[in-house]
Image 1 (tube, one colour):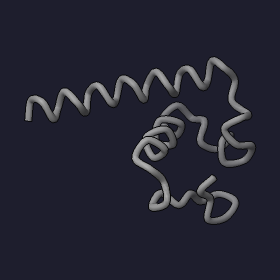
Image 2 (cartoon, rainbow, N blue to C red; image 1 turned 45 degrees about the horizontal axis):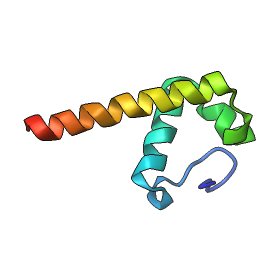
Image 3 (tube, rainbow, N blue to C red; image 1 turned 60 degrees about the vertical axis):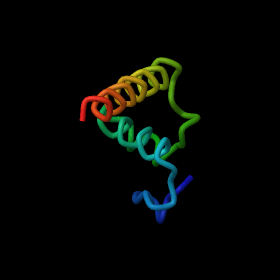
Image 4 (cartoon, helix red, strand yellow; image 1 turned 90 degrees about the vertical axis):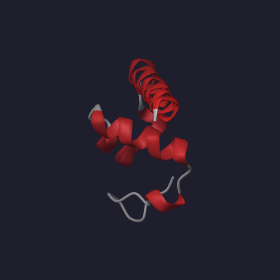
Length: 68
């Protein structure tokens, strides 16, 4: 993972997709769990929620580019 120390994440070393995944995890309140135990600690429901929101955000960003 891209941790600088126990609780800080190095966003500069992440790909845009990884950044988005981490941002969504923060929004749904799972960032602490990911920091402490890793992505494998998430349940299928939690992972699906993150994946669904990532897809939604990507669509919105694509639509904004199209409209803008």
